[in-house]
Amino acid sequence: MKKTIYAYIAGIIDGEGHFTIARISRPCGNGTIFHYTANMGVTNTYLPLIRHLIKVLGGAFVVSSNRAGQKKVYRWQLQANASREKALLAVIPYLREKRQQAALLLKFSRLHGQQVPDVRETLYQEMKKLHQAELVETNTSGTSEVGDVKIESDLQGDLQSEPVVTQEPKQDIGQVFADKAFMKQLVTKSPFLA
View: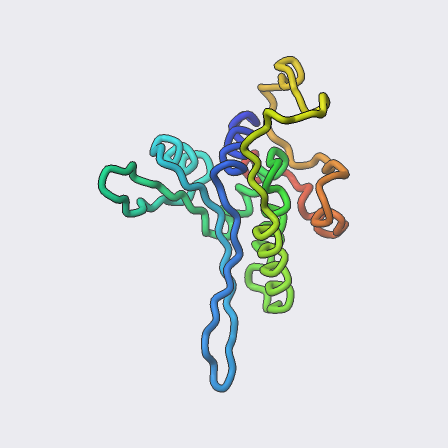
């Protein structure tokens, strides 16, 4: 698969996607136990886009009930742990807005089968903070910094190479990538390229 496909999908996920870690409480004797689930997905009204995501990354979609006169809404989801990890490794290098969320979801996915409720709770709380801190900026016409403006020649790149997840991340990625052990796990070659 060309790396432009993963860059394209990362752009879709940045704009229309989500990364979630959910906590479900269940009564147990005199207390409560928590069960955690993870999900990544994209919600969109364009079915061919959703089918493309399934073709490239796997997963499934559901159709949300629509009101009379409104378009159908399709929600692609990738819940299987192994598939989700492969997809995350393929798109993380290209994500801009949701890279920290994706990195947390990758950490969470790699806990599969481990009995570490404190770590799961910590990742849940970190994801919750990231979701609460999200700001949506839709008007960029007031951009005053010339450095923010990109011209076409700046945006052209190597469109033929395969994506390789062995590159070191940039320094501005944030605290998520400060964990050296996590970075060693993250910079493995994407299973999609095998």
